[in-house]
Length: 261
Ligand SMILES: Nc1ncnc2c1ncn2[C@@H]1O[C@H](COP(=O)(O)OP(=O)(O)O)[C@@H](O)[C@H]1O
Ligand SMILES: [Mg+2]
Image (cartoon, rainbow, N blue to C red):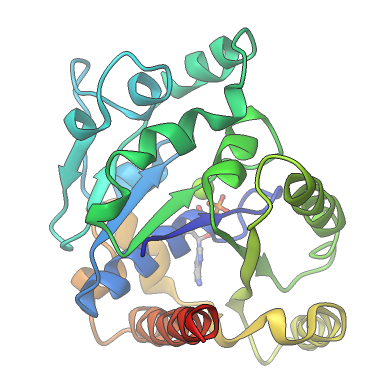
C-alpha cells in the first residue's frame, strides 16, 4: 500500500522543503520506493534534489492540468528517489484550477496511475492554504507538519487543523496526521524548549520523537543540488533525517497492522 504524505504548514520557512528532500532520501535509503512531488512554484525541492528543469520538460503543472501523462513527468534523482519537478509555471496551474470543476481532486487522480509503484509519495506543499494545498490534502493519506520552535509557531496551526477536519468531512474522510515535526531546533534556546513543550501539550503523541536540529549542512546542501545524506553523510542533519525515516516507517507499519487486525 502506498502512503501519500503531504508535507505542509501555512507558514513559509519552517523546513517543509528541507524535510521533503531529506525524508525522501532517507526513506529511499531504507529501500522504500519513493516519489517526491514538488508542489511549490518556487521549485526548491526540485533544484535541491539536483533537477534543473528545461522549458520543454514536463512538470507538475502539465500533470495537474492533464496536459501530459504523469509517467512522462517522472525524473530519477541521484539519491534514488523519483521526483515530479516544478518551477514558476505551476503558478499558471493554480490560476487555471480556479476555473475547473472538481479541481481539488486533480492531483489525487493523477497519482492514482502511479501510486502502486511506490511505498511513499511525499508532496512538498507551498506555504498557505490555497488551491494547491487543498489538492495536496485531498490526495494525501496523511499530513506531516514541520514546525519551527519559535515565537508564533503555533499561529496558523489551528487553521491547518480546521482545514484537515473540514476535508475529513468532505473530500478525504481517511486523512490522518502522520506527525508534527520539530525542525531547526536549538536545545540551548529557552524559547525553543518552551514552544516544543507547548506543541506536546497541544498535540500529544502526534508530536514525533525525532527532533531535527538546526544544522548548517542542511542549509548548505541545496546549493549543491544534493540532499544532506549525499552532501555530508556524517552531519547531524543527515543522521537525524535517517532517524525520522525510521520513525515514520515504524509508525506506518503499526498502522498497517492495526488495519489488518
Ligand atoms: N534544520 C535546519 N537547520 C538549518 N537550516 C535549515 C534547517 N531546515 C531548513 N533550513 C533552512 O531554512 C530555510 C527554510 O527552509 P525550507 O525547508 O525551505 O522551508 P519551507 O519549505 O517551509 O519554506 C532554508 O534556507 C533552509 O535551508
Ligand atoms: Mg518550501
